[in-house]
Amino acid sequence: MRTRIRSAAAVVVGVSALSALALPAVQAAPAAPAAPADDVQGDTQISNVIVNDGKSIVVGSTGKASVTVKLTASDPNGISDAGGILYHGTDVNHNDWGVTLPSCGQHLVTTYTCTFALKSTSARHFGVSKNAQAGTWKMWAYAIGADGDYRFRDPAKTFKVLRATKLTANAAPEPVKKGKTITVTGSLSRADWESHKDIGYGSQSVVLQFRKAGTTNYVNVKGIKSTSTGSLKTTVTAATDGYYRFTYAGSATAGAVSATGDAIDVR
Image 1 (cartoon, one colour):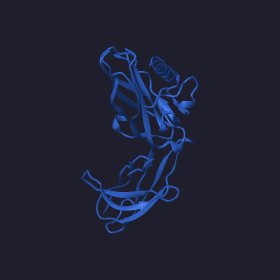
Image 2 (cartoon, helix red, strand yellow; image 1 turned 135 degrees about the horizontal axis):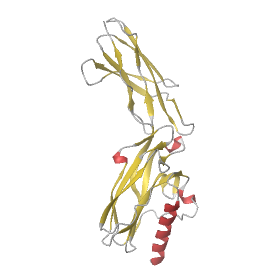
Image 3 (cartoon, helix red, strand yellow; image 1 turned 180 degrees about the vertical axis):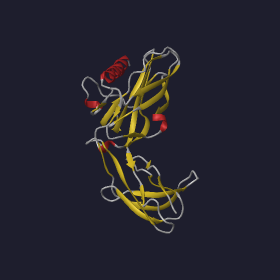
Image 4 (cartoon, helix red, strand yellow; image 1 turned 30 degrees about the vertical axis):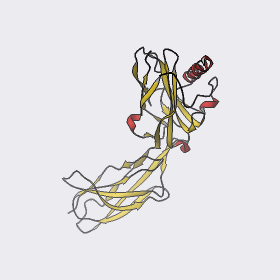
């Protein structure tokens, strides 16, 4: 059994040696043996795993994002270390991309909540490299007790990583006579993690909404689809002053977004 403890420790050392930047398949990383997927020795526990405050990670065209991960590690003899890997793939040993969390370090209390902060503006960030990496991600987590007990969980958590979207809206003419036609145009784009640009997002269902002047809530007017280049265009009849905008509910790989409302003056 002590052989397995040394193996477990080697895994943690290998993982800690990896860059916190996005990295290729973890199982192929130099000096890092295959990580145990789901294993336990003794009474070490992992609980309350939270990735990005429970929200999807929405990543812009830079391919970088700020993410905070928390997990609670517990052991009657204290915590020697804890950490994990956020990855895209079947399991931690069969993935196409992963991001290594920093070490939690030693905490000689029976229960400790580790907080791992990855900042988009620093070298230690959450990163992606291919558009195909959008969708469901998982977290492999480990905790090691001060007495050599350990626990590995895979997945300890599943979460979404989405391509960021942008949306614009413009209502014209301005001003407009009551009963006349208003044309609302705009565009829907999403982050391309490979070219590091925002590109048109075609054939997506988008809703035109209207907020009457002096009110706070938008109501749905009609649904349309973006063109192959992401362009949007529709018409409505002028009735009263207010604001028009487009809103997009998102998809399995792209984040939701609403355009800034564009004011219309009806006379």
